[in-house]
Image 1 (cartoon, helix red, strand yellow):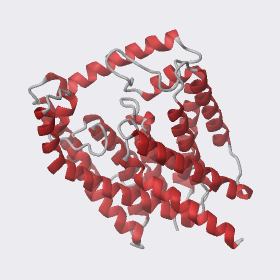
Image 2 (cartoon, helix red, strand yellow; image 1 turned 30 degrees about the horizontal axis):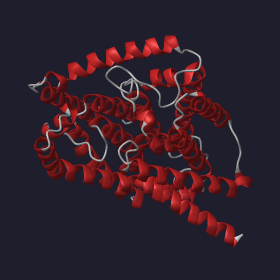
Image 3 (cartoon, one colour; image 1 turned 60 degrees about the vertical axis):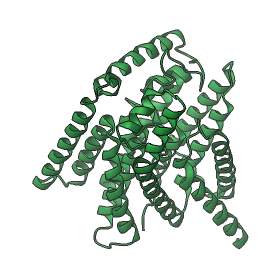
Length: 393
């Protein structure tokens, strides 16, 4: 029994290491490091689940996720261009959900602290990139005649995005972490333990970086989810309304800053127009391949490799079954998340978890972080936390 616990602890430590480094590695640009990380996470998670087999109990969500996994696997295998790396990534994400759900309370606390500490490091690295790396990167691009307009916009307009490929992806990641921390902050307001102080530090730094992403969509989603948290937690009062007025003013400042850009492609209106175009093209792909889809990793548009709407892209890549299973997962998450807020002792924590998950779902209406493991891993952890019977100490 002691040996089994030792193996479990080693495996959990390995998983925590993968979780810590996951948001630092973008799979497209750091292919080999990402492949190694996914491989380690896959093996550690699989062995962990096998080691914990006597404690496994299946619920309806597990079955739907399994069906979704089978659909994704079939999509990969039936595609003429098999994206095995994508298959490994999805498998690792599904396993990450499940190990979160079956983990012990102490392990879960360690997982939450790892996520928060990693987010603090991400925020500090992003600030470092904004203050120092952006300037040198821009100079390097000019010296070597590298023309990439969107990268020049991120760098020249002083938008935070490191270590992600876009400010919007960074914003989506930060919002989930912030909402988790907000829930933990209020849950531990009386005891003021380690979770409380770490959450406060993370909220403070991450909010600054979130503003510096200058992501209109990200900031809008954040305001909506914070409002949702306050509403479900019973915190809506006059002071909170002043806070929301302030946040809306900040959103207006971001829009004004973006709108003043001399280049049209950097303006918010350009993003809206492009997204509408992408959605129409994606709808055409769905009409051409409604049942089986085009296959995971085989989605292409004239000017983009993403639809900037993950729901449409899931349908386009995996077919009708893929989108049905995904919407079913979303419905169960929303139903269980609301139930947790009103039935659990740690209602603030559950409200934060729920708001963090909702932020991912809303943001993917206008973006593609579902397909980026660097961000999506956190959603699957949130899903695992939502369906677990035990939470914080």
